[in-house]
Image (cartoon, rainbow, N blue to C red):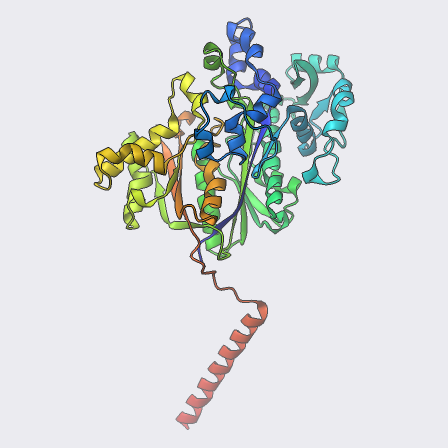
Length: 513
């Protein structure tokens, strides 16, 4: 079989400022320690309205209305240079919070999501329908609850509140009275992951992809659903597929912290190349815990809290069509257990070694998609410009290998890298934000290939001190489709083989006589 190809990629954002305040991990921990903390008191004044979120250049880049190159040409800070205002992009959409709440209702199959009469009266007409879903009513079967009931349940830890502009809008109930794995907080996180994953998968339809053709789904977000007997047992993949109409698909979840999308894409490619499935969808929803993760530093620097969106993506990996960019699974870099944890060792394992084994120099890769975090989010928190640091390390390795002159280091970063633009949702920035642009650039003849590099921090789970990582190359299609026989051809070949066998036997018998 030929290499698998990338047939389509989608990206979505859901603006969720009230979810950030109530359920982002930093805010939850701060409130538990000191409800009067000055950060919490100042937070509201630093939240952006939906219109500013839509017009924020980095968000416009994420959904495909600006290329990374165009984004780099806009003066920073980008939050002061709002030039684009379309919520729809060629790769996806930026959803408002009230529409995202409707999606929570749409994906809830256990009647855990409830809304107040006031929320229903104010927003139902606006959020009941979305063009991607045709005549489907996203608010169908909604559960109604009073504000007093919500407050009583929240007080007893039986529900987590849903707020809208600071007012009670609804809640997510616990799914079990005693199992903390099915607590209201975890159910809210899981439903948000499922909803944003569904949104991402649905936007593949905008690119002419038939979701009924999907045979297998791999979900690779950072959340894990399960109950007391199998914490993290899954399965987000089939739960998402059920909602979006992937009726012919099975699926499973892949977890690997930030590196999970790289693992999922590689596995999807292998399944297709092996001929097991023709169409595999890789999908991931957002992480509630990461909302406002660096908010304290953003407030300290008197800037908007930029981590105010849940993010998701979806990618369809299919059998070779002779046109779409190929995933070259003969060039796969991996962080081995014995690799070590220094930045140089990690980059050598993920980039230098696999390229060298394939007879390629690091300069032969047109673009590298690394950890594509938006630097306006990470720099105020002291993490620096993450993509730029990665590109400088790759360039330094190329110099060390004698593939680049030291004086060429700045130009390598400029030519083979790009500015970061992805929200810090953990797994979301790790390589995948460029898949859509990279696919398009290869199809348009702008580049011949790119390398996706995903990295993960396994030590966060306190089971090992190891890092993780996986990389692969996406390249221009060779134009050679894998050979496929239809049923009639197969029958014809088998019949001819049987005739040949019979004739050989007859000749042997005649010769013996």
